[in-house]
Image 1 (cartoon, one colour):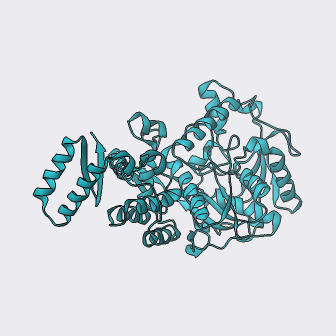
Image 2: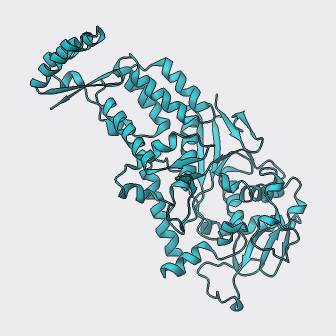
Image 3: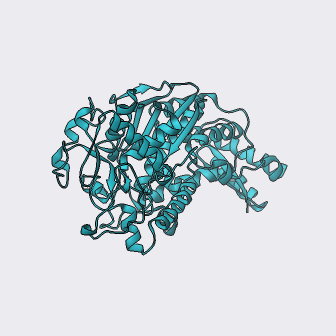
Length: 466
């Protein structure tokens, strides 16, 4: 029985889908103006692990992740997502390309990194620019219900008219003092843009690459409206799970709730799941510090992207994770060791029910991946036959996503290793159990002269041809 921490209730709850065995899940995806960094990918791994865990529990997941290719303004970094330049436009100016080309290039790069980390591609990945019609229609519904007003720079949602605004984040976390500037035309400091008008000649930003006609004037959608429009289009007015980084808890997600529930009068999402930040050497990641590492940086430094995945698994998703190159090196060593051990196992059959039960309990306990890794290594060190270990480890890997079956290349030892060598290996194992190490070493040397090396690793004897 899966239990998950629900940010809305601020407690761990038993997961109960609206329409079992079907589960609707939405993840706030990337803004494709630059390469996603390892902090971003921790959130996407959280979604991946949640999908895998739900499926491990025999549920069917429809997972939607948006691609933000318009409307996300630079003011978001300073506390106000309604100010600044559109990130796509800014990147276009910097790289001297069209905003459309920027979006296409970085979306492709994102999907490549997604695959490198062995993340399961969502069922649907809708782009904001492909759903302008749906966003305009949603704003029109809000307008008819009296939640909208117009200013000189856009159309805004009136938060004072929505009862319970900020219930996800605590109202004191959404206060005017956190904003970089105050828009005097806003009726309330917390009000947010649904539609922004194209810059005028006076602003010096004429000729936007991305703008559309609307009932209110030419412009582009606000950042928040896309997620409500697309999630409800593909998952319905109410669905099960919404995932995102903890930074989205303060404004973006409360704004999604407000505009969605204002239209439908229904609960928008039942479970809100947020992943914590990644620190680098105990410091926040930033471009200015040069520590906002990308997956490509991981590869250039000689590391396997799956070593980064393994490193993510070592910290619970609700705890801040500290990235260091030393920690990544240790993760890679542990992963390579696991591949090496499993490669010596017999072909999988009849798993270890004891450890499978422990693993299920770990992942169902609010995605306790550090505990699930501990179960993996306890199984490796156990006295179960290697064919049983392999069977269970491959089951676990459906959640862990470390590609054990492909990387380990399990062989049928009885076919690969001559019968006389196998016999000596078994005799040596018996001598080791009897603590007659001098005689066991003699057999090791004899086996080596026959062209095979023997290694002992956590209770597993590995035999390889020299």
